[in-house]
Length: 112
Image 1 (spheres, rainbow, N blue to C red):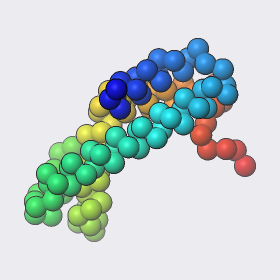
Image 2: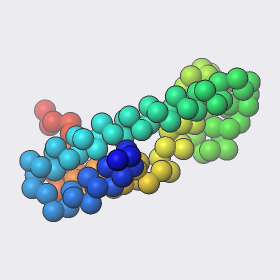
Image 3: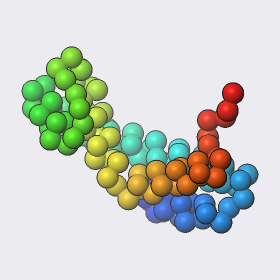
Image 4: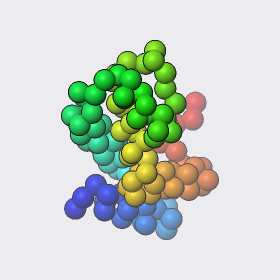
């Protein structure tokens, strides 16, 4: 099963879940979200790593990710990966799942 399919399955199961189960689903989906972003970041770094810094900055601006010349190459590449990742079905499903969970008072970060 792919990361995308698993996140979609978790997101589909979330609305009918009790709070305790929802926390577990959200935790698993968060791990998969982070892994998907990390994988895409690595792919992006390999693909764009040889570009000139000015070209990376231009690509980030085109992708709608604000950045400036003060940011290092690694940050810009991460921003590019994040911009692409956030448009994937897996990321969109996770974000919707997390927002719906928050409306139910469920969050992975415990209240202090």
